[in-house]
Length: 564
Ligand code: NOJ
Ligand code: CA
View (cartoon, protein in one colour):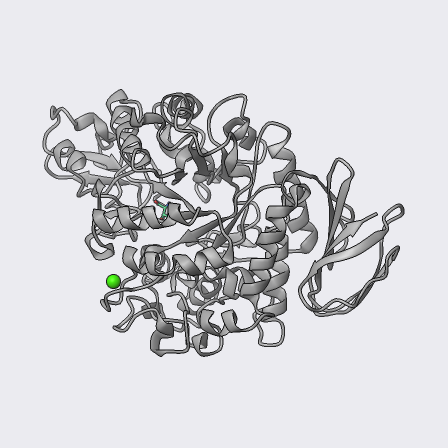
């Protein structure tokens, strides 16, 4: 039977030892000059990914979609988005990946569908349609107001009145993304079926979009005033979520030995182990938001400190504990660029700080997730006006906050320039050719003008590039079990500029030291630690002598040492 076809080659918990690379297909590589990245474009770049050394590609949604939210609104789960290619293109891409030893995980978006999905088209037809209960329908209040005060993440109410039947449907995201009703067992059957469809093709698992949101609050009571600014903490806390995921685990994920990573928006560090403790049988791991949202209040940019970053990482490690597993990432398609966010993207320090951040991401006790362009140190886009943005989130907030006069335009733009998701969505910078070599046509979203300096072709030629630093780090991680599984101890949690931690497995011990700033520093190692040798650094460190206990750290130095 095909059910176990993909399993034998993959050992248990294989996903702990991999490095994942996220591809956002719309912006990765355009093969036919229509300005939109596509599957053949990805296939053409598999040699590049193989050279980088990654093990797994996470592909953001590639399904048929009207693109209200760039594919996170799926119209048909068994069809490839026409702009991205055909199912034959998908099969060829997957075959080529697997021939190169690269596994593929795809995006499972099943908290909601597109309003153009046939399930919703049926559901909205009449109150007694057999698919009515695939979605969440409620009567309005006696005065006609929405059933409760839930806000949508993209602005306005999370309820939309549908004139055909006079009831409201729930949508946590865009009005074109109605939430599925997981209280209906038919919805489980449909989702499990589509998961099997892709697993039987040889896909190795799923990234699960806002998966904690699938269980809704009983009775859907109003949010309290203090819950309104961050509804995710309520939306993620429905009583059935663990039951649903355990069922998915037993019926689908476990039989296929599939990798699963849940987007744990609204899940606190205390709750994370409930999803990832292997003894409970739910998900392989989750994405916590504690690091990427360290300096965020919704669209607002706030400040972050190094001790706060270190504390978040230590807590993520503790939450994974003995029986769970964590993820390590600084960027994805919903966040600003890592080097602009946590490094220093000025010309003087961009490369060195991007390498330092790579060192951090790739030496955690967690599966590292790189986002396309991280390996080049790609930066945020120089956005000017609201017209430069494509994102449904920015457009929704602009209408709700700026056009209503609640937030001055200049203030909103100043923040969103640093926090917008579009920073990560500008096309990959492949070369110094027009539009960064991403397309021969007009790109769907402007390429960052710094592609002339920052591009893959130039970096492949330069052994000291950010790309080759990533390649070396990935290779080192692959050959060093202590960097994957070793215990993680932050040896100086309060230091405001130095981040130093050990990774220990049996008698193998490594020390990672990162200088998070442009000030050179002398750093005396805490008692008991002495260096055997430097294993890998980002090209900035002085040679160390064996037995050294005092380090002279250059700006943004990042070094992995082997300890005695
Ligand atoms: C999280 C996805 O990463 C994001 O891009 C999307 O807008 C929402 N979920 C809704 O699907
Ligand atoms: Ca194309």
